[in-house]
Structure formats: structure tokens, C-alpha cells
Amino acid sequence: MRTELAVIGAGPAGLAASLAAAARGIRVALVDAATQTGGQFYRQPAAGLAAGRPEALHHRWRTWERLRDGLAARSVRVLTDHHVWCVERTSGGFTVHALLGPEQEEPAEVHARAVLLATGGYEHVLPFPGWNLPGVVTAGGAQAMLKGGLVVPGRRAVVAGTGPLLLPVAAGLAAAGVEVAALVESTGAARLARHGPALAGKLPEGAAYAARLLRHRVPVLARHTVVRAHGDDRLTGVTVAALDTAGRVRPGTERRLACDTLAVGHGMLPHTDLAEGLGCRLDGLAVAVDTEQRTDVPGVWAAGESTGIGGAALALAEGHIAGCSAAASLRGTAPTPAPAALTSRTRHRSSAAALDAAYAPPAHWPEQVTDDTLVCRCEEVTAGAVRDALALGAGDERTVKLLTRAGMGWCQGRMCAVAVAGLAGRPPTPSRRPFARPVPLGVLARQHTQEEPS
Image (cartoon, rainbow, N blue to C red):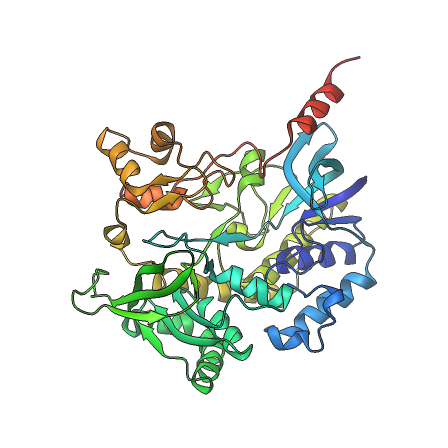
């Protein structure tokens, strides 16, 4: 199909961008891999589950209703079940290449004059002994099960790691009837207090979650971390320990908590595969944009978590600004974003930077990773194998990959690359993957055949 603007990602940023551009007369195609719009933040249960009160699982439900109703009122072409694996620059603009449906075998293309990337983020997970046991899930995974499937991962859970996502996950599980044995947060109150002024706007939300945890009698273990997960065929418990001010485990503080579920996460990382494929410049691990959310590639905008993790409110503001800018560029006019969106972006970027600094993972987490701990689960590469590669002279993730196959599996390093960098004592680097997801060889072959001159 052909359109003026292709928006990739139907979470808060993509929805706001689509509505802003459509309101200015632009033909928009909104492309997303899920079966429904909303992204992770506004994930909805399937209609067949007949959820009586889906709003009980969500924060800012009225905002979602406004977005949903606005999308229905606008002439936005919504293309769900489209798994985008590449965006290609062409003479007339861009071609968005996708795979259709759950099987992801049939190709589809969207031809657009401009592209807006709202590809979101994915969870930052660090390895520890036992993290590959059945019963250990990511914090976002537990939330997705609850929001999308109306199911819980177990009866007694520990929620652990660091970051603001842990609060709604623990509160949501407790409200759903799960006994939450503890919320284990590696950040302490002192670090949060140092960023108090920038986080002032987040206090009401945090206080509301704290009240819910108190009501369900959920213990909060601040400045603690999970040292090990226990079990044979599945998770039976975890050992947690206190951290000192340097982020090291304090000897003698270990305690064991019985549980059948561990929901663990250490924040989020930006999804930049499509942007990197287009040649967009990165700022660290995020897509670099200007004040109008334009990338340095003409005709490409980016908004939301792909430009830096900041939460739904920031994504909404950035999406609106990006949609207005893209529409103005396509029409040859000046962009007219709502002043409230500009103010919101400034405010939430400030709080996002403070949250990022306050909720950094423990500095010495690699010291707790034993040599027999799997780091790359796809290729079954242990921490010991990674350390052996480092001892041989490997100095980055790419060289470790060549020596151990870490990062060569199905996820292409999305789960393990940050951990490998941490074991090497280096900051993570951009991945530079050629495709955003695995593609059947038959699809690539047909693509090549179509491009052959007649």
C-alpha cells in the first residue's frame, strides 16, 4: 500500500504522532506487530477474554480512551500483525518491509514519503545464577501476562531489580491475588533523595503505588539485590542480600525467600534497529533527534523510548511534536505543536534523566555472576566462557561473539550483549544489526528476485 507517512509502533508515541499528523490532513499508516494498538503501556486483553474492568490494570486509562477514540475518528490506516524487519530508502521515499501474522512468513510492504519511528524499548536484564530457571520472568513479561492475558505467573512472587517499573508490577500482581513476598530494589532512598527536585513531579504517582503495596502488606527491601535463584526443575526460592554504598553485596546479609515466581528487570533499553538500518545517528544507545524529533536522515522522525527511555508521558509529548513536524514537512508549512506538548517534553526529559541516574544497576553486579551462569541463553554460553575470551584478549562484545558465539542466537544479542559488555568492564555499544528481526530466507530470495532487472 502507499501512504504519505508510515508510523512504526502503536504505543503512546506512535498513537500521538498518528493523531497529530492525521489532524493536519496527512494520510497515515500506523504499523505494529501486535494484534491491537496500545503498545506495552496500553496493552489490552483479547476480546475473547471478556474482561469486565480492564481499566483496573492500567494507569491513566482516560488518556488511552482519548487516544483510542481519536484513532477511530481519524482516517488512520491501522496495520496490526505487521512485524517490520527493515525500512529501505527508495527514490520516492521509503519502503517498510514487514512479515504478516503470528507465523511471520508472508511479506508485506508499505510505501511512504516519510517514516516516523516509534519502536519503543525492551527490557534490560542482567544474569545471575539461576536466572534461566522456569519461573523466572522479566518484570515487563509479568506485567504483559497480567494486562494481555489476565493471568499471573505464579502464586508467590518476588519482584526484583531496579527501576520505576517494579512498583506497578508488584502492585498489579498483589491486586490480582498473588502473594508478593518482597519488592527487592537495589537503589536506596539516599540516591533517590539526591535527585529529589527533578523527581518531584513523580512523587504523587510513586506515593500511590507505595500505598497500594502497603495495603497488600508487600515488604520493600531497598538497597538489596537477588544473589541467586534456587530450584531444580523450576524456581523454588531466591537468595537476596543487602548492598553497600558502592553496590557490592554485604557479607552476612543473605536471606532466602520462598517463591515460585521471580519478576526481575533493570530498566529499559531503546529499540534502534530500524533507525540504525536507515543510517540514523545515535546518541549513546538512543536515536539522536533535534527539537522537532527529526533524525539526521531526511524524511525520518523518531519519538518515544527509541530516543531515550522516559515513560509514557514523555512518549506522548514527543509523538505529538514529531507528528506535527512530519506533517508540516510533507505539506511545506511550519510545524504547530501544542505548547503543552513542548512544556511536557522538557519537564519529563528532566525527570527521565534523574530516574536514569537514580536507578542505575549495582555497579559490581558482575562479581555475583559465577562461571557456570549462562549469559547467552540462545547459544548456551556461560560467564566462564566469556571470561576466558576476555583473558585471550577480547575487548568488546563483537570479539567475544566471534570467540564464543554469544549473541549469535535467535535474539541476536538483545538479551546478552549488555551483560557481555558488563563482564568486559565496558559500557554497552550499539548493535548495528542488519535486520530488526529474523527473516525467512524465502522472503529475502523473493525480495532479491523482485529487484532483478527484467
